[in-house]
Image 1 (tube, rainbow, N blue to C red):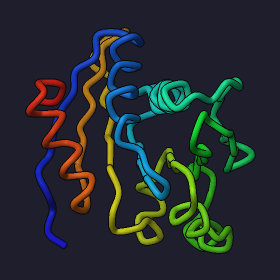
Image 2 (cartoon, rainbow, N blue to C red; image 1 turned 180 degrees about the vertical axis):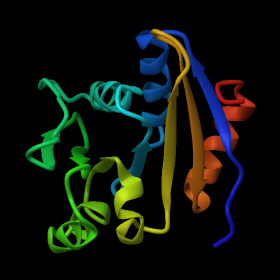
Image 3 (cartoon, helix red, strand yellow; image 1 turned 60 degrees about the vertical axis):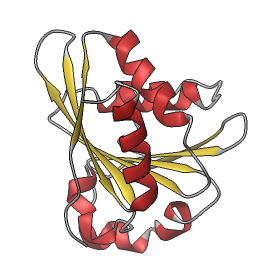
Image 4 (cartoon, rainbow, N blue to C red; image 1 turned 180 degrees about the horizontal axis):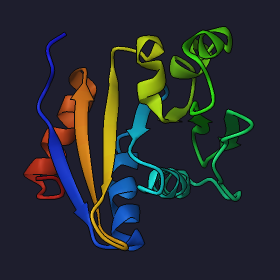
Length: 161
């Protein structure tokens, strides 16, 4: 698969991060996979929390750094929140992540670059860059037709650059 186009979203604050999450959530279907990468403190967990809220998760969502995977129920879809920072590729492989990736919910993987060989070919890869106290740049790289279509639509609607 060739590398697809890259899109950007600029957020000056958490409210604008939540707006991105809400726009993405409009497209979610069972089997949606979103991967998040960025430095410590870039905003991966903040975006994860915004995604969870956008799909109707009513529980507190925090980083699953030590539990690796947390499962929540949204209004219509389960939300699987993963943090693979502390896993080796072999350990991640043993967890049976495919059950989540190809399951009935939305899977969001923080630190996904550490398990890139285990990720499904179709996914939306988001890299977050911290460019100020509250300002973030989100770089979206769609892999696969559905995700490319999402990003194209969001660009046409002037949400993404």
